[in-house]
Image (cartoon, rainbow over all chains, first blue to last red; front, side, top):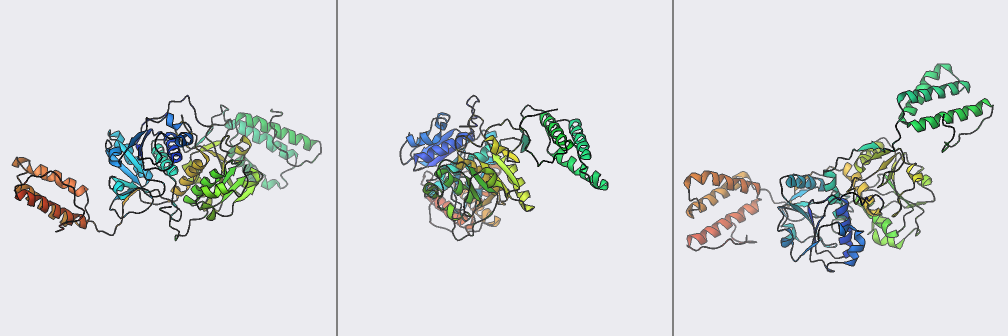
Length: 269
Length: 269
């Protein structure tokens, strides 16, 4: 359960997930887990083949059933969606129904907009093998088809729920696309990087690394670009000073050694 | 297997998926299936606990192992990524490593850009319970963390692979966000919708539906907006003419009936 923080209040709400005639309890459990992963809590079952509650679902849900709102069980799909103002129906295949078809991302955006207006939405998922009946499709305002490899587009039930639920979470999520772990260790200021670079240049001069003096400026610039891109922390800059000192000390002893591993600790100034 | 078209050439290529010390063959199979769903074919295993090949993986993969490139098995993570020029490592939890962290969508965009430059990328996934070791994280150019409900963010292995692979497919996919099934049935031209509306208005006039003449224009406009939004096909427009005729015929008989179901077939002109 790495990554799960029980001290954080779970995100609740979002569209209902309606599983129509699901066969395996295990798949209901996987669907429940995917829902809670993505902040959905309203699970409804229409005629679950193996009954409800289900020990198999409980095991596969990895605790998710405790976070969901009480699961509702219905005899018909119509009854299951009666209180919703918009319904989507997932399907992997083209139907002979003249219906709007949306991507999961589009459905998520539409359901967010509806929710902001106070409307409740739900998404229908069919049975493992057969999918939804056309009579269920006809209850839906739009079909959702997940764009996938056309040669191999069959998702299992839990995975189909995950993709739709993930797009729901994603559509309301503002996680920065690219960031850097905050370890509490400050990144080295430019001054420290320049000092480190200066130290390295001096050591390389002593080691007669720059055989052709005319090439020295370009080589120094290339090393500076590389060192800057590595964006060292203050601690890393200190460690690297130690590395340069250690290596150039060996050189001054007249000893040639191969490249050595960056020490875990060591002389840090 | 609905939705899978064996006659279509599978999409091949994309980043490598590297499962480090996976425990259950079943999860390797689910991962393989998710990969092929999303057009990925390069699966590499580092020290799979239960060995390779695996009958459990074969069963869970639902045919995906036949589509993958031959699965490579390695002793070390370093060996598994040796030929790659960029490596991402998935983790649900913050590590005490000063590392770039990206969303799956950002990773997909970066891997697409790298691929366009001829570089090969791969994504590491850790063992079911423990995730990746920090020594494996240190091999990665960046960590991938899936933004999820912080109170319940643990994905199982197959689902983690699905999210990363789905974002890969999504980043190269141009499926329109909203479209309409092409059933071959043309949408009715505006002329047909206007004729239908005119037919309905005449029938409603005969039935003295418009009690207050001053309100007639606004009510007609409201019905017209609704009818236009329903965007009927030519066949639907013909059926609806029949519906109006049938209902107004009953009315002309002086008989009052409740609303009836739209007939499946019936008088269509």
